[in-house]
Image (cartoon, rainbow, N blue to C red; front, side, top):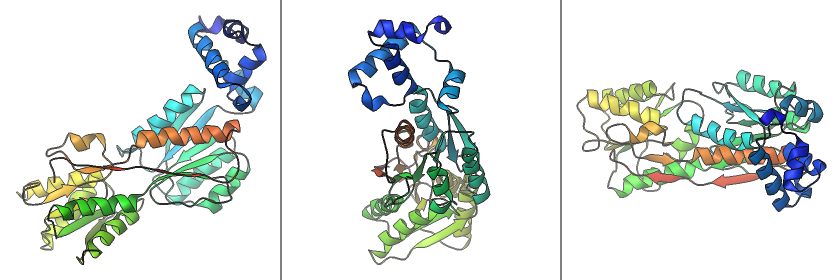
Length: 334
C-alpha cells in the first residue's frame, strides 16, 4: 500500500500544503516549520504508510541518504550498541547507516575519509585512533560533516568537527579509587596497545600516585581476550601477585580471569578483577565483571543527532564538544 501513497495524500491528511510535507519529509529546512506541524506531518505519513522514493530524493538533494559509522574493531562487543544508536536516529530521518571497520590504522581511516570525499556517503560518525583535524578538516570544509566519539577531553576548535566524549582518564581514576577504597594496595593494570588505553592507564596511574603507591602495568599488543590472558600470565610468571587487576577493557578482563582460573587463583577472593566498557558479556561471565559503563547507545544516538543537525543546517559554526557520563558498575568480580 505504501507505494501508492503520495505526498499529496499526506498533505491532505495533515491539513498542510504539499510544499510543507516535502520540507518535513526531506529533513531540510525544518527550523522554519513549527514543531507541531512537523509532528502532524510525520504522524500522517506514518498513519498512511507513506514510503518516500529514496532514489528520487537522492537525485533531488544530491545526497546518497547514507551515513558511515567508522569503528576500529567490528568484533569488539563494545561497538554494536554504538552503531545501533546511530542507526536508530538516522533511520528515523530516512538515512541508512553502514558500519565500516578501520582496525584503528591510519590507512584504513584515511580510506573512509576519502570515501566520504568521493560522495559515497553524506557524513561520518567515527571512533578515530589515527587521524586528526589536519586529515578530517578538508572533508568538513567540503560540506561533509564528521562527528567523532572520543575517549578523552576535547576543547573544540574553529573547524566544524563535533566531538562527543566520555572522560576515560577520570573514569579509570575513579575505578582505581573504588578498589583502593576496598582496601587494595597492590593493583595492577593490563592494557592493549592503541585506542583508549593510554588515557585509561594514565587515570589508573594518577590514582595510585595520589596515594603514594606504585603502578604495575603490563601491556599486550592485542586489546582482546587473548591479549588479557597473555598479559595476566606474564604478570604471574614475573612473580607479580597483586590483590586486584584492572583491565583496559572487558575483553582483556575476561581473558585475565581465564588465566587466573587456570592457575587456581580465585576471583575475587585472591585477586579481584575489574574491566572497562560494560559489554554484554560482562554480566554473564562467572563471576560477573565489575566495570565502567559508558552508555555507548546514547553516545551513538547523540552523535547521529549532531551529524543530522549539520546536514539539515540546524547546527552551524565551529565544532561543538559534548561530554557524556560514565558509571562504575559493581559486580561479583570485586
